[in-house]
Amino acid sequence: MTLDSSVRDTLTGPTLAAGWVALFVAALPALAGVELSTTVRYAPLVASVVVFGLPHGAIDYVALPRAVAGRVTGRWLAAVGALYLVLGAAYAAAWFAVPVAAAFAFVGLTWLHWGQGDVYPLAVLLDADYLDSPARRATTGLVRGGLPMLVPLLGNPETYREVVAAFAAPFGGSVGDLWLFAPDARLALGAGFAVLTAGTLAANRLATAESPPTAWRVDAAETVGLWAFFLAVPPVFAVGVYFCFWHAVRHVARAVAVHDGSRAALAAGDLRAPLRRFGREAAPLTAAALLLLGGLYLAVPNPPTTLSGGAALYLVFIAVLTLPHVAVVAWMDRAQGLL
Image (cartoon, rainbow, N blue to C red; front, side, top):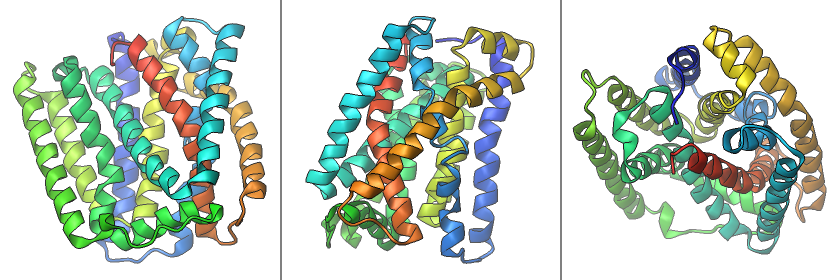
């Protein structure tokens, strides 16, 4: 997929800057040695209910048909609704049946999806020529998704275990002491992922014909910066900020770019009108999702009573929505030549 240069110029700067600025500000307390309170650590996840996080998937019902067919029809709305109903219901049932397995599946699913979400801005907004290869797109996505999903385990294993345990707890699941959290496991995973990161960046550098290699430099800087960010910043806080201002914002940019009217506005340098349209289109299903979240709270065997427990249940709900959302994005990838 390619975008007109005028559209790309309007989208690229704000889209990338949102994540860079948010992560820089979020890293300042860690750099200053300030310990964040529990409320502050969970604040970005709470904010994600309305600040891009939950809403970024609430426009799938219009983003997918626009990307694939160029227009929204009743059949497309039914197809997206059926996709969410079938996949979401199946994954919700898995949480009740095998909560620990479902929790680790969520980590793997998010790894896949957040990597998937970072390939688009590199390939389309930055026009990275080295991502013309399916293999390089796959390894780049694998690295990018592992930064928020694996690196926090390396630096904060106990917190990581607590979060995964909190996912399973409302359903009666217990994580226990797994090899994954042991020092030797983290050493092996960290070393392997570091090699994968370096190898992927090196292969991409060799494959680019761009001179100077601007897109690759941005890719490398972001990759190294995210490594440092997720090692240094408390995991829950780091992931919440990343979810709202990095991953979700980049998907919103992709979604607005498939709308003809929004593209025309972007070509004219207008970012506000596409964002207003995004807000209007995301609002109904965001509200519906919040009602479903309330239903999940009432349905679980052990409803949470703390902020951390409530945030974990919210993330479980996000997990249920993520599976069909991944399918939607994969469909968009295929239609736009990224898969």
